[in-house]
View 1 (tube, one colour):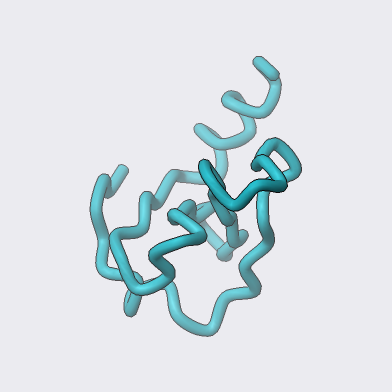
View 2 (cartoon, rainbow, N blue to C red):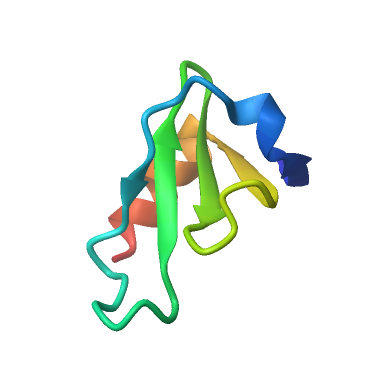
Length: 65
């Protein structure tokens, strides 16, 4: 897992705001599904760091919700 990739690594992806994000514009995350990984970023800082998570690990995470 890469904890702080540059967002340029994850360009060309379709980003979606998490349904768990608040509507007040405070704590919001966006996710984008890639071929081998899911990418997560702060919606308020689209050019900032991107968390890249292998698809298998993401699936395990989602199962716990």
